[in-house]
Image 1 (cartoon, rainbow over the protein chains, first blue to last red):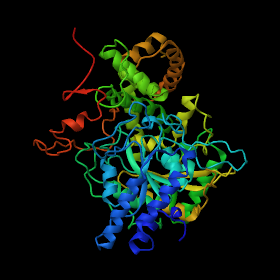
Image 2 (cartoon, helix red, strand yellow):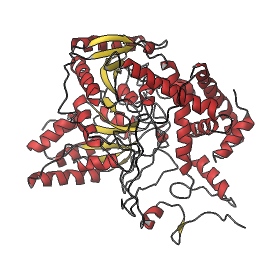
Image 3 (cartoon, chains in turn brown, yellow):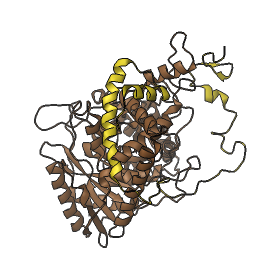
Image 4 (tube, rainbow over the protein chains, first blue to last red):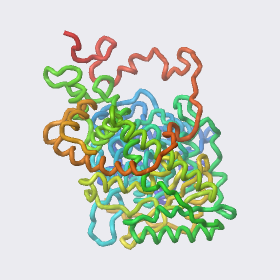
Amino acid sequence: MSDLTELGVKAIRDGVAAGDFTAREVAEAFNAAVAAAAKLNAFIVATPEKALEAAEKVDADRAAGKPLGEMAGVPIGMKDLFATKGVQTTAASHILEGFVPQYESTVSQKLWDAGAGMLGKLNLDQFAMGSSNETSYFGNVISPWRRNDGGNAALAPGGSSGGSSAAVAARLCPAATGTDTGGSIRQPAAFTGISGIKPTYGRCSRWGIVAFASSLDQAGPMARSVEDCAIMLEAMAGFDPKDSTSLDMPVPEWAASLNPDLRGKKVGIPREYRMEGTDEEILKSWDQGIAWLRDAGAEVVDVSLPHTKYALPAYYIVAPAEASSNLARYDGVRYGLRELPEGANLQEMYAATRAAGFGDEVKRRILIGTYVLSAGFYDAYYTQAQKVRALIARDFEQAWGQCDLLLAPTTPTAAFALGDKLDDPLSMYLNDVFSVPASLAGLPAMSVPAGLNSEGLPLGLQVIGKAFDEQGVLDAALAIEQRAGFAAKPEKWW
Amino acid sequence: MSVTRETVAKIASLARIRMGEDELDRMVPELNAILGWVEQLGEVDCTGVEPMTAVIPQKLRLRDDVVDADPLTGGGVRDAVLANAPAAEHGFFGVPKVIE
């Protein structure tokens, strides 16, 4: 039997359905890969028994001739931001260490209902705040990729879904869930040579996902092919009455409708994304992407998104403001950590608990958020940011008058080394410069691998679409995937 | 606009995060760098622009006014609610004494 861990979502599902191998064999192969990859630190908790249990149910259903789900027999990694009943859920924080949810998040439940199994809970930046997976209380995730200079520098897998990206790239799982607030699916996907899509805001229920910035948070799949992402997104998406911003719309058959023929489509190239400081090789891969989309039949047009440079500063007001409010719930009373110094009163207990339970980046963002929402500063910061956000959304609306999709790089550079940006929060934030605008506008956006740079590291291209047009995004990403022929994988060193 | 050490101490207190002297010293320049950078939003002419309230226009739904419409989020699950409490006593959340 060939190595099952090389297979993706569709190949596993179809192979299990055809009887080429059993779901149990698949689960065992991935469980072994997870167990052998401790050096990557991609998982906070491994749950081999959960993967086996789900697999056995699929094998039994198949034997009994019952219909199998769209993800039947596919073991996946679950970002540790999704509440999983009976399995510790930490958001990679100390304050939630030991928290065992009494309920299951909507998205994870949908995946289990579709026949997927859980290999474990994946590491991430603490409360999804970070771009390098260096803010996790449970340690850095190390990218499986290395530069080709023989130097073995430990590289960032991206963030915040860094455990997800590392695990999928290293073949520890065929696919993983991610969440994206300002680029947390797309940036790690780009850094590790995999695909990932953030759907339209509201497609995937936020119920049971640890909240960071509720007007931006969206779940999505990360996998090694566009088609695998489409299959998994279908399983994750759908209306949920328990989320007040859930889209009450049917879930299209994205996977079955995939079509890389882009004739009749117009793809806009946003000129403001040609920014100073962007790596030359990234610009070259962007030009290559433009050529590929032309080859697929698309007409390429120049468009302007004039407020692009204000997207990041607006994001770093809106997201921390929402975070400061969302994270007020961690008080040492209802769940999670409690620090009760001798003789402390209730207020002192709150302050001691939060001081001990939150990492530096989380504290920084809570303070920024508290400040911009405080009396006297609210209008100058928060209201102004929400106005600029409206202008950014309007920029996209106007662009859709000229085109159907946008093509841009996912990140301004390839993966950087761990530690490189840790002492400079601003330079870390700049990593999300190309991904944040679509988040602020709630638009579907996907990163797909374009190739390797001269250092042997993956580069990603980003397709941004109109609200609800995940299909257009997936189709263009597929056209790129077919032409890029990206087959590189990290050489195993772990 | 830049924040002073006193302002940061005040914000930390509002956010209920205890901060030592060293931590405050570290936070002040970091916060000022971030705030100085977001200040550029002031250049944007937002005359006549309404602040965004919903990224995808939607009507907020109301659920039916039925007890336990969803058993998961309804009542009668005290033990589950308390299961992760650091100090649950007699069916309640325990906290330090709040009245003398």
